[in-house]
Image (tube, rainbow, N blue to C red; front, side, top):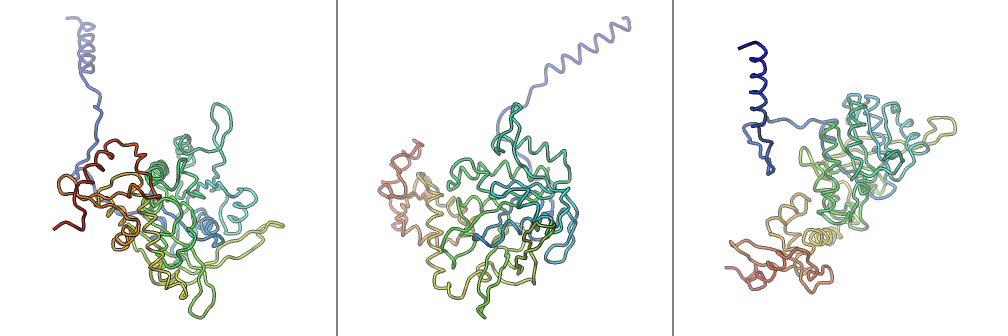
Length: 395
């Protein structure tokens, strides 16, 4: 056999083997624990800002939340020191703001905070088919990741307000989780800390600060760390501002730092505020951010937050009790408070197949219209559950 014939036979054999390779089948992707290597959480700021994770910074209007975030950005870009004195490695920052103008508001604050403005990149829009449009996270996240990879060494992403990333109803748990996932994926892909800014709901001064974050519980449930900023009166009657950790699934969940806002003129005719950090403080966020005069409101405010939680989690569905418990734990709401709120709302508790318990809002409630359920299976479940004994009737 000639050399060309041998070569041709080998080529045909390889081609035949290639044709026999089947593409991966669709289905669930499983990873065995033995194939994973345990890794520690990596921190941009130890205990406060974790690389690849979502963080929420919440507080009432006027507490300087954006200014605090800008201070964080300045620390990252300048390789400065965090409020606890630890040094931050130098990195780049992405800022997506739907409320403040980069030129006349954000940049002056960055300069006042000592940032290296050449390391800060503002998301101002997206070009689609040659036309400039507003940035749409549901459409432009891949393009943003490509731009961030081109920049390189992005270590902090600031989204202000984080509710701007939710294209649907930001008070609906499922829609909010779905909308936040691309941002969470971006942070993980870029190995950057993601900081979303939001507000407190009105009232509730005595409750756990995590429960006061406006919108869906998904914001605080998906976030690994929740930071809160507030101005409270000390025991001597003087005002003080405090940044505290209200929740952390990956590190300490207490302690904080005093801070105050200062005005300066970083450039001639340009005035801006910046954060001046004070001493560290100890205690939980509830202890640190509760005025002495508000303590009597604590129990009622906590139950109000729990009731809002149930309205979001249950909606028009029939939800397993275990799922409600898991969601409550992730949101940082005590189960005893959930039970009290469920009694107030008249939540129906029924046992279904296999002895499992389910919760749902009452059909006659003005808080939810169960007759408009889109899931036929849920309708069938409700019919079955109505015939079963209540949780209080079980032996």
